[in-house]
Amino acid sequence: MNVNLELTDHCNLRCRMCSQSLREEAHGAPHRFMDFATWAHAVAGLSDLEDVTLCPHWLGEPTLHPEFDRFVGHAFAENAGNQRFRHFKLHTNAVIFPESRGALLTQLASMPGAAPDTFLAIHFSLDAFSPEVYTRVKGADRRELAFRNVERFLEVRGGTVRPVAHVAFVVQEGNVHEAADFVSWWMPRLRASGREPQLTGEWPAMDSDAVYLRRWNTSDQARADTLHAEACAAVGLPVRARAAGSF
Ligand code: SF4
Image 1 (tube, rainbow, N blue to C red):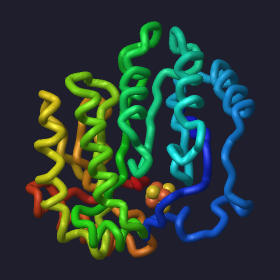
Image 2: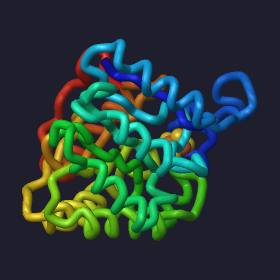
Image 3: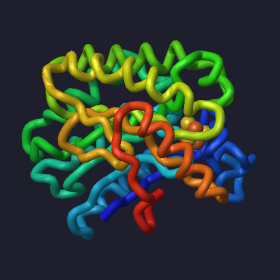
Image 4: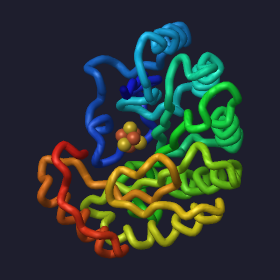
C-alpha cells in the first residue's frame, strides 16, 4: 500500500506539466508545512497497516520543509524491524539537496535493523537538458543547481546500492528534442557507481538506477503519446502503447 504523507504543498518550481504549479492553492487552502507532532503521529499509525510504502510528498516539494531531515530521520529511527513501513520512496526536484542531505539519506538507507531494500529510490524530476529548456519547462533557472546536486548525491552514495537513483524526464512539447542529450548525460554518470542503469520509457524497476523518459499525462494524451514515442525512438527504446491506467 502506498501512503503519501505530504510534508508540504509548497513548491519552489512551477513546472508546466504539474497541476500543483497551475493553482495558487493546491488543496483549496493556503500552502502549509506539516508540524512534527502530526508527522510523528502519522508515522506511528502506519503500524496498523500492512506492507506500507511511505512517500513524504503528494503535490509539493518535500525537501522544502525546513525540518525535512529531522522528519525523515525520525521515520527511519521508528522503523526498526520495519514495524512502521516496508519501503520508502522520495520524489524531489533536487533544487534543495546539499551534500549533507545526500549523506543522511544514504546512511538511512543502510540503517541496521530494517530490511536492506527499505529505502527503495529517489526519483529526481529534472525534465530538461539545457538551462534554457529547463527554465521554460520548470519555471525557474535552476538547471545547474539541480544537475550538480544529483551528481554530488551520486558521488556521496558511491558504490552503495540504496537508495537507487531514478533521473526522470517528462517528455512534452518543448523538451522532446533534448531527450537524447539527457540520456547521454546521465547514463555514464549512473554507470560510474559500477552497476548498469536501466534506460526506460516506463516506470523503472526499484532494484537499480535508471534514466526514465516519462510519459506526459495530459488532456491531449494522443499528442503526449506521440512525443513519448519520438523520444523513445531517439534513444533506441522500443515504442510501446500506453498501458491502461498508466500515468
Ligand atoms: S517540482 Fe514537482 S511539485 Fe513542483 S511544480 Fe514541478 S512537478 Fe510540480
